[in-house]
Image (cartoon, rainbow, N blue to C red):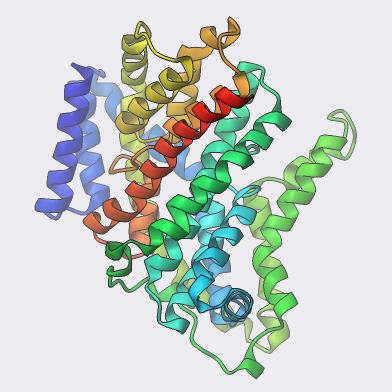
Length: 439
């Protein structure tokens, strides 16, 4: 019955958005109430679940998204993104720019959460596409693949870290296995998939707020300034993460490092620096910069609402207990433990939308198999992480983030982002099973 209710709810959501053309945020609210009622949540508690879902999701994302939009705007408008893209083009050549973006996404994606890395790299992607007249998705797909893989498989991202702790795996070994697995996943789901005919044929116009105007070389900031200002969040998170590993939690410095390492604080520091280095030091008026920031926030306001709506829907599914019902129903299946962990995470991901919820729920069910020594706990982290990424669709905030930023249609998002996630998930399972034969 839960499967049927979820299927009907998602079908209802598709009808509202695709056929009736209802605003996605309103559609999510309507479907959340509908699903909550069918799943048996008491009527007085349905709106509370919706509000908690919106609050929980926006509480962790709204600062990062808004500050990231501002940082992205000044990186684009100052010419820093143009300077970086020019350097990448000269280094890799126009034909290989998608490989350069994939490499950048991998490096940036290891320390940064998906949303932070996304809003950080989007201006560079759009500038490359605009300046060199290549399809935006041809450049964007490698970035999305790299960020998705690092988010789902590699510590220090939340789900992999939580799984390592729950399975008592080794963080270092998991990271080594994860990097070995990530490289082929990113290559296939990124630069190679970007060459697909339908990807290149996607004629889209990305959000204007993140397309910098072409400027003469003498008007651009220096390469070092552009790279440092754009990637300062990466530097800060790497440095603070390494220091946190060495500093005693009871020491005086630990609270300060913990505070500075928070993604929201990192973005605030980075934006402040960029405002100076790419703004006032380049003789730009502070009033003009603030107007640009206001424009950037207006441009992502709808994105924030849509993501909030997906959070409401996800919370209704979670509080109804449907993810636990699905997992318990699969517990008696006879299959390889790694495949079973992947499958449970995949089904919950398809049903609930949240990769993190899918991973942690699957871990709770599959945990006894790991505890009995039937499988390598480090590989189980990667198997569940791969399953939790499969086929992002309407109930996932990442789906709407990609759709709105790249200004895609629903069909185009399904044919690009959703397929990227599916390629990563299925290849991740195959890779983990291959590693299981070796290690």
